[in-house]
Image 1 (cartoon, one colour):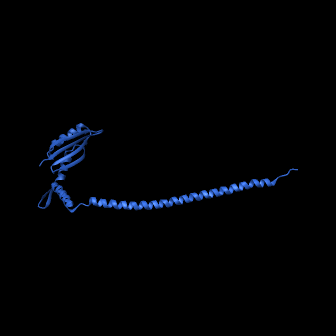
Image 2: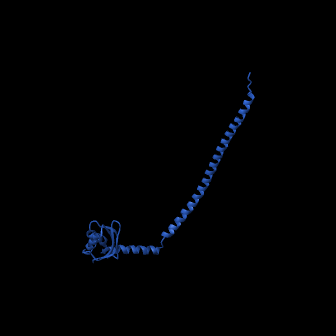
Image 3: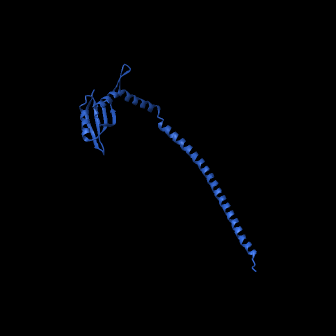
Length: 183
């Protein structure tokens, strides 16, 4: 007859129960450690954000003070600036009897528009001293640029047309011209 020793089987189950209990304890402590680490990280972020927020407010205040000091012109500087602007405006206006009789800028632009050929693009325009015009235009090729210069020289409104710079780009020719307005 065969005998079965049941006592040995109980000894084998006991270490597995201890192993299972240890694994459960290890998982619990690992999860608890992650939770504590996360809470500490969030607390650190809150402290850092409040510190950065205070520094940001101080910096915004400094920027506002510096902006006010830069834009805060003295009364004398403001008066000079207004007088300079009024001088530019008066140079473009003809005033007779306290009323504006003509706006010179619109006439300049009208005559310039009539003198510009098709296919020419004006890149910049500047009216200097109420009688000198500087402009930069772009043409498709040198032939179009030369036709435009001749057109401006033949204009009844402009005189002293001179080419100051010409440069060839990838797709266009840029010309800088200065000219005077006939009085």
